[in-house]
Image (cartoon, rainbow, N blue to C red):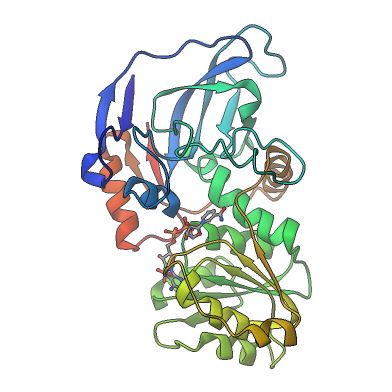
Length: 334
Ligand SMILES: NC(=O)c1ccc[n+]([C@@H]2O[C@H](COP(=O)([O-])OP(=O)(O)OC[C@H]3O[C@@H](n4cnc5c(N)ncnc54)[C@H](OP(=O)(O)O)[C@@H]3O)[C@@H](O)[C@H]2O)c1
């Protein structure tokens, strides 16, 4: 089977296509024939050696496929089932623990860039029927992280306003989920053309963060001086201070990403004077995925796929993400 791996060095140029024997399931295990994958910014950081993973590495966390074989002792899942592997292989339910964060696909555990994956039987979950493999492949990290932000940790609904930053994978999912739950959305982007696409997806207000660098104040204006209920914070270094300005008194900022850098100096008095809740999250559990999948099925919600690259062109897909020209998710078809 074909596998993309980095053996001795990080860097997109050091990703090599290898040929390996297909796995066989042992007790309690299954083999999934992978059909599609999707890219996350974390995968780009990991491939470039900035994600904290060690070598050798089979990258990428997110994919979808069909169960091909089940080992002894496996029940509740059978050959032919269409599934997504979980981002955290051992976070099945309940609150996050140090242990449940340890087994992340495409990091400490071999990732989805292999044509046949050997997994624990409870390390996968069915995805909604109306989705293609590419669409389903966007769910395990980007979809679930956005879901956890706007449906679990800072649940939004009618009467709430959320702010999403940029038009990448997590932010577009947060926009779609928030609209489906009845909230209003302010979307930011560096591109007016992408903002028009965000409007078409349901964004109620848009701000170009290049031409309006003080977009926190603009968000306050758009909300009549009140501020937004929830900020889905994916920018990090260059966005957190604006997020603190944009949030309403008693609002929540869900800290997810580092697109513009890893560290920031923030005005601490703003945190307590506005009674803000800053909450860091990493993806979600199997149980939370099940809740997301049920709502996606009910809403017939379709993830936004920017483009799908053939399996042989994974390096080109990573370069496409690096260029930042995408809207929504970049996928790979096996
Ligand atoms: N904590 C977690 O569990 C978790 C899970 C998933 C992702 N993440 C993190 O969340 C972040 C987003 O991930 P992703 O996969 O959705 O990324 P992505 O798809 O690569 O997002 C790229 C987009 O982000 C926007 N962007 C870049 N710099 C920005 C800035 N300074 N202000 C506002 N928007 C900016 C740009 O949108 P425009 O082109 O529209 O300007 C860019 O196209 C990453 O840092 C990732 O590591 C964390």
